[in-house]
Image (cartoon, rainbow, N blue to C red; front, side, top):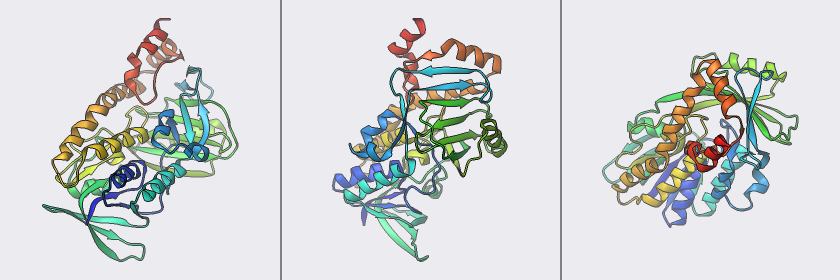
Length: 360
């Protein structure tokens, strides 16, 4: 019997598995397909990412450096409101290789990494969790662990099987890529999608990423086609996925806990979740003892103490996307220019650096 079975080898699952294996626990890490595939997440992240990776990872992952963003109330030809810093505030990375790097690190630490292993059922018992798994050859087997970590994304099967509530909202996100190099250092953000936005991210030699997210049923495909047509491009590769917003009241049961998108540990104002999910993974690894189920309460409280305020403020920021256009323009005009804000921490809107910039 394992100490932990971790379902999902994305950033939170691999990060947690790495820490747990390093601490001497027996860990199985199950991925339903190939690690990193299919791509369903943007590669635009804050520079804090490197704190969670081996020192040499940047050589393989880094594609471009970003110093700011241009906000538009309309399309590419509409007035741009620039927000920037004098140094890089974010990086663009190879998103698939990020997953592979983190999974390899977990395996090197002693994790039993199994690709093409799909969890089809869970039975949470008094002293263990029995997991039914479909193997690559189509047969089923059972595995047992003291605890299970559900890191299997926004439509988590683990969450569904143990009866944890779904996120408050699931947005529909679309990504597409063009191959022409673009070393620009500004992201373009378009407040043209209902309750959310569209974007264009230069990826250096890797090309350009275009994306859009909106509530399901909001004609997402048509809105995205309008975006790429306005830019005059025909992307060669497309992918899509769900973006969870708003964590449920609890992300734990007696022997199961959720991390990352499965727990909706994401930024409500951008949909990004890589840094929040790995922060939660570190908290889980430092608080949870698989032989002591009551330690799940410590995880539940600790991750909320760390992230709840940022998520709450992020929800308030997102409401600005739905303000009438004249008010959006007024706000963007009042705030544009050099900023002192961290892209993962809305609380920095009230930091000394940002307030100094506002009143200068």
